[in-house]
Image (cartoon, rainbow, N blue to C red; front, side, top):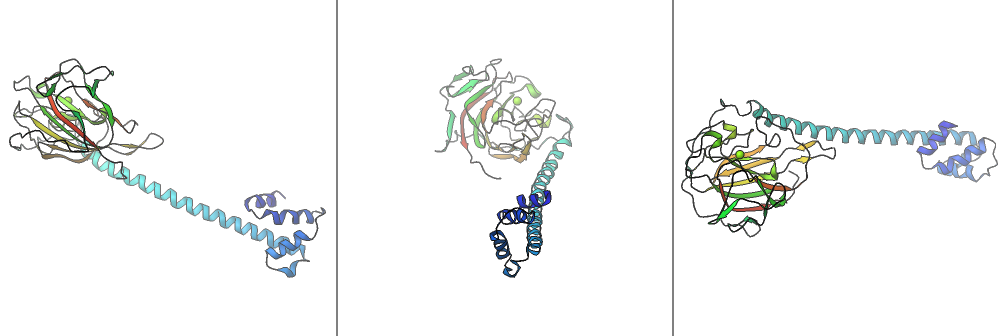
Length: 331
Ligand code: MG
């Protein structure tokens, strides 16, 4: 009885078989159920053969139940295989890119120095497109704050902002995800130090992923920390620095990382960067947020976060900062 009851649950035409079973067990059920079952089986000649009807009804219900279960199993298998393959492809792609990074120790001084390319002289400020958000037009820091949410304390004069040492990083009040970002910057005309101490700052999409700002004009340091490097991960393809004091440009295309509902990484962030109009990062996959002497893993974060500029203790200047939000795509 239990088996038959389960079959009845699995198969929704139970309204036909249950009355019939009751009849077989000696309950008072009229012949209506017997006729219904025979018609359902399209064998009206069996209307007076309840035993045969019972067997056929059970067979039909049982086979349909099995068929339904097989179909469900096949669909589940196909879906599982599809998602599994996608995961594998993602991991393969990720590991190929990240192996390139991990082939070198972080800040490895033996990593090859990218070749020097003369980008030519600086030009006038690049006009902001009509669909861009101008984050700094040289007048004030009203769209910026420090990392505690207090007013930014960097100096603003003559159309630029300048890092004031030890006032801390500043970030945009507005938050962004995928974006095209234009930044103009200049390191002090006077030599302040050497290596990482010469004109150090940084541009951080989502306040986490750094494109290094540094004076690497005739100044060498570890390649994954030089001008236009994705700090700690990818050296720039070429060294396109202008001399100290001259205005330089970054044009950055950034796609945010993606995380699954469980917080796991499903797609790494990517960056393409032009330094003074020259390609220096070609759609690289980031291994995680910026770290010094460490490559930290991703941690799930919101889809939009502020843009951050770094106070590294050098008097770096910025001007003409605009950003275009890019649509969320299924890339
Ligand atoms: Mg920096």
